[in-house]
Structure formats: structure tokens, C-alpha cells
Length: 256
Image 1 (cartoon, helix red, strand yellow):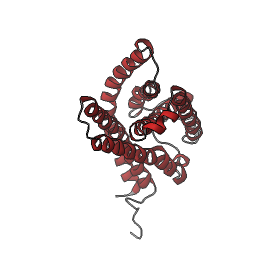
Image 2: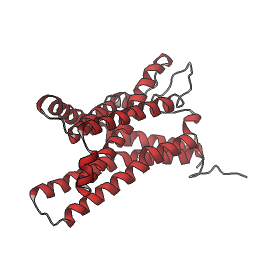
Image 3: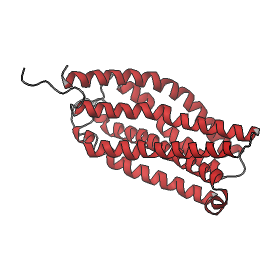
Image 4: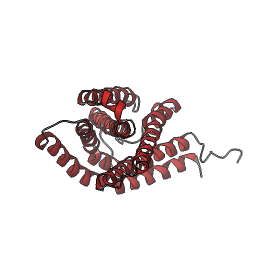
């Protein structure tokens, strides 16, 4: 099998996986995040650190969900060349939603770890203003990084194209992909796993068996699952496509 055939096979596999994952994510995610924003912004009277982080996360999730129907459509249909600006905007929103959610979940895990494992120091560091500043910093970081990266993903051509697919070779360059995988997923994932494990360990070591303690452990497991289940397969897919493109998985045969 040549590298070209391998690349086509991976592309087809990723499209089917995306449809199976994106349809339920879009349906349930839209309802749940809209309900969360309604509760946070209308019914809650007091803004706490957790409320601020969760509101920011819901907004990031909505950024991620909005382009999903366009992404599913683009998997099987070409877009005319004049829609390239729209495609760039949708791609930027999609990546902002992904990596904004990743970093916001990481901040929530760190905040929870500090509050439970280091309560006295956390009282000095935690505040609604600090949480708001952290969220603004995450938004600024993600918008800057995504704007810089998406400008290199696609070459401007006067031909029909697949939005969200068939990025330029510059977009698949090793520095961009390695930075994406390390700083966009692996680093935050290690922080989330570490903070979640330490927090669960601290709760169980304390000997508290109250309903509140058990509920907190369940919330941590749910947050960890909400991080790892959707983001791990997508980044493994990016790694697989990167390896295939650079002929590390199925090198093209020579001498025959």
C-alpha cells in the first residue's frame, strides 16, 4: 500500500468517525450548553470562581458546536472558491472552541485542586476577579494562537475545495503539528489528570464519606471523562494523519 492510499484510507475513516461523534455532540451539546448559559446568566445571583469558569467553558463549547454542521457537510461536498473567507472564519471558531475548552477545563482542574488540596493558600489566590482574569487570558491566548495557525493552514486557490479538510502542506509541517499536540493537548491533559488524581486522593484520604464528598469525586470523574473522551481520539487522528503524510506509517516502496 502506498502512502497516498494510506492517506485516503485514513481520511475516509476519519470522516465516518467524525459523523458518528459529531451528530450526538451537536444535538446534546447545544441543548446542555444553552441551558447552562441560561442558568448562569439569568438565575444565579452570585458569581463565584466556579461559575465564571463554567460560563467561559459553555461559551467555548458553543464556539465549537456552531461550525459542526458546516464541518459535517464539508466532509462530503466541495465548496466554491469564493467561500474561502467563510471557511476560514468557521475553521477559526472551531479551533478556538476546541483549545479554549481544553485550557478552560485545565484551569477548572487546577482551581479545584488548589481549593481542596491547598485550602489556606487558595484563599489568598482564589477570587472571582482572578478567575475572570484567567478566563480573559485563555481567550486572548487561544484567539492569538488560532489566528496565527489558521492563516497557514490553507493556500488561497481559485478552485473548489474541502473546508476543514485538505490543508496545505505548510499546515502539516512538523513544528506546527508538534506544538499543536504538545501544547494544545498533551500538556493540558497531563495537568488535568494530575490535578484530578491528587484531588480525588485528598478527598479519600481525608476519610470523609459524606454525600458532598462522594458527589465531588463523581464530578471530578465526569470532568476528566469529558476532557479525555472527545479530545483524545481527535488528537490521535491528527497524529495518525501526520505520520501517514510523512510516510512513517506506510513508507512508499522503493526499488520495485
